[in-house]
Length: 187
Image: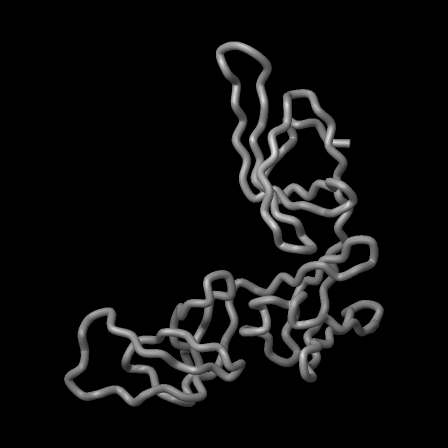
């Protein structure tokens, strides 16, 4: 059991049998009355957000979430196959379980998969991935307005805005948290 004064970001708590992660919290000590902590939490299974207030001194149940290093092997239809690095066991996750991570998954990519009660609930990608630009419009000579961008389709099927000077066949770095272009891969 965890005391309310131990609440912090990314703390995993069990509420009604489901694991929640603390997204944001605020400790409040009013002039009169008992101190309390306001929290904003995300259900790790459904993704739903809730706001919950805890009085000082309340006990919370910690959610035991097991995180394993896995390698993305391949996708087939709406299922994605991952292999555990240590036991070589394979698991399949659906498109719903993967969410936006499907836009950045490439074969043999190392990811972290979170398990709750031996059930996969979340996938954590590396912060940055290198992806190839499959198609984008060619740059027009003289069209060099500072900060101008154009859409580019990546090898995963995801579309991202890139600077005008980039062309098809080039590799770029993409931030998986925001889905935005970071830089061109230096050769």
